[in-house]
Length: 140
Image (cartoon, rainbow, N blue to C red; front, side, top):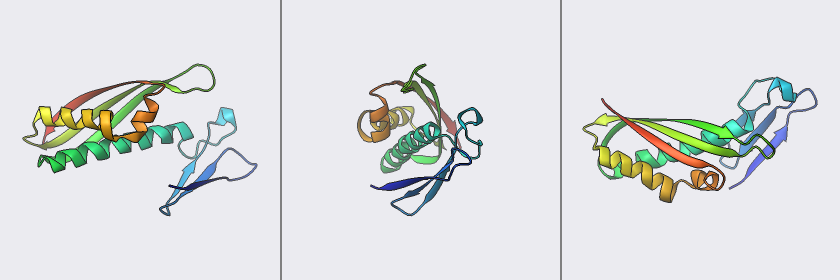
């Protein structure tokens, strides 16, 4: 897997990234750090990727289990260390899974399997952060 991150120049702290799969992503810093607040912060991108990884796993596991999953949202709330490096110290994943006649045990199992076995992003973050999760099932 390859990515290239390039600084956009001396007028701020914005960066563009090109992924090996050919996609572009913008990042920017907070104004107090010299940025212009025009794109997500790099550490927000870490959370975005982790949430995407976990949600992907949950949906795939439920589909493979023949559950009638119709939607999956995950909200991550994170705390960071006070001093550099300001690593994540706590992350809570709140999953809202929508479907028809979803079995709570199947949803819990999917979330647990993602955390314990499949999500490489959360496995890395678990080295510094206490990771918790909660689940909400919506009929629909």
